[in-house]
Structures are given as C-alpha cells and as structure tokens.
Length: 219
Image (cartoon, rainbow, N blue to C red; front, side, top):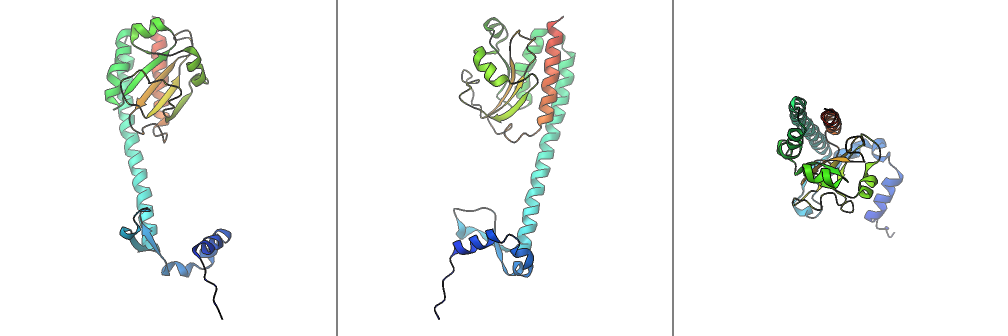
C-alpha cells in the first residue's frame, strides 16, 4: 500500500477546522515541543522547550508587560500630579505658557508640548504652532476629545518643528480660548502615544490645562 504523504498545509488545515483537537487529546501536548520566543528568521538558534515550559514562559512575558505598564503609569502619574500643582500656582499667562511649552516637554521626556491655533497674532505672540483653520477643523472633532496615535504626516502639525516626532496626543480645546478651534498637542520621538498608555492621566492633565488657560484669559 502506498501511503499518502501528509503535508504541513494539511495539518494546519485540519487544526483550523478542529479547534478543540488538543482539548480532546490533551495528552499529546506532553509529546510536543515549542520554540522559545519569536525568532522567525533564525530557527536554527531558536530554543525548543516542552509545552509546559512554553506556557510558563508566556505567562512570565505577559506578567512583565503588566508590570512595565504599571511602572510607566506610576511614573507618569507622579509627574502629572506634580505638574498640575505647579500649573495651579501660576497666575500670569506668559509664565503659564512658558511652563507648558518650554519646561514640561523636558519633564515628560517629550519633543513637543504646544498649542495649535489658526490665529497668526496669537501664534506669533506666544510661539504657538500656527496652522490653517481647515487643517485644525479636520482634526478637532468635538471639544475635550483626546486622540493618541502615530503621527499622520498628512496633517503636518509638526512639519515646521526642527524635531522628529513619531507619535502624538491631540486634545481639542474649548473654542472660547482662542476664538476658534484649537488644539493642545504632545509629540514624542518614541511610541509613547501609540498603545494608549496613561490615556486617562493625559486626558485629566489636558482638562486641567484647559481650565487654567480659561481662568487666566478672564483675569
């Protein structure tokens, strides 16, 4: 009898059609080994380990990610709380703007924290980012909206800044502040804003900045 050769594709197809196969045949897992890590391009150097050890290693990796995220959020929370206390102590607009635009980027290890406005006079006076109102409107959405993502070059918010910005957070400010749609933007050369780390903290911080600038504008 000629045995039909079973190809890898047949095995994959069978497992896809039978997702409960290993549940019904759990003893097989003790005989199967798995690669440690994701070395797709260099399988010769991949370490092969039993299924039990692979599960343990996977859980360790997930736990490390949870701990790293918690550590990042803790440090961010401390910096934000300290910065908010400093902001609330400021009673003069020029000092407030200087603190936001010049000092805070260093505090948070960012390339840019600034305001984006279509008012040329205000942009020139405070060294804000000036952009056409049409561009701002396309991003604005609704008041108090926060977007965190990779930089979209077609929006060109940071094109006139001599710094490389890879990811950004964009907060839509109250239209009363500059008399037209305007934005509070955070720019990072890293991936700070891609996975929504500390989203709630940044939203809270942005709202505090908005309320303080409204307060100073009315004084």
